Amino acid sequence: MFKDKVVIITGASSGIGMATATEFAKKGAKIIIAARSLNKLEALKQELSSFTEVLAIKCDVTIEEECKNLVQETVSAFGKIDILVNNAGISMRALFKDLELKVIKQLMDVNFWGTVYCTKYALPHILQQKGSVVGVVSIAAFKGLPARTGYSASKFAVYGFLDTLRIEHLKDNLHVMIFAPGFTTSNIREAALVADGSKQGDTPRDEGKMMSSHECALHLLKGIKKRKAQVVLTPIGNLLVILNKFFPRLVDRLEYNFMKKEPGSPLK
Image (tube, rainbow, N blue to C red; front, side, top):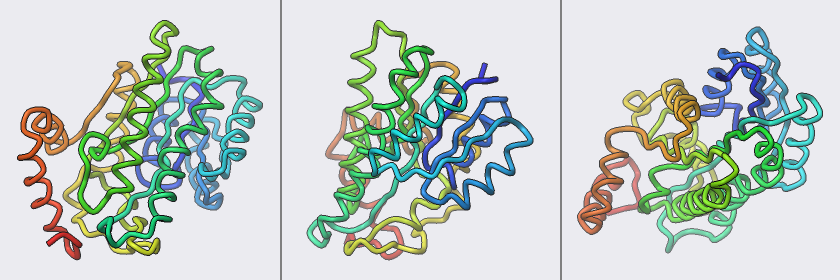
């Protein structure tokens, strides 16, 4: 069903975004890969061009004009947009009492406003195709994660934005999917910001025990194919969402104890 569909993927230079672009390319979709690193995008474009038509566009999703340009260049090249995957995102790890406020602003700019900007300009074209808007969020969109106030706030905001967008367009046959991968192998933890806004560097988790970006991408494509409203991945993720509905204070304690086991955790 994805053959000749025009798909924009933000944050496509690594991790889930790169894996998603690869899977769409293999299925014959025409893909637009967007990220800040044009060198990485060009390398991926060269790799995927054997499968399909690929357009690589440098785009910082915190800049509204660059998001607008991303959509304009896509329409100019392919004449339409069928699917937008809002995947670009950053994380953080620090207690709020120690956190410089610029860190929360940066997370909101990338995770929330990046989704809003890209969706705003792509939406008229997606509505014409009765297509899909996807937001890659996190379990943090359903339950606040300790030492990740800015990350949780931004993902809650994306959830609320997309949930409302779906309701507004109930009669337009617009598909809106909230996609929560859970802990997935990617570079998001290495690039996570600490209290002063610098990058964390090393991941505090065993990446080898997590769901791969490739497997995550397959679930994302399956969710779009079935036009699901919400997809939550990993057994822990699903358990947390379900338990939180009935035993929120228990989940508070379980979550705190789970997160404080991370190497170097600020939780005591």
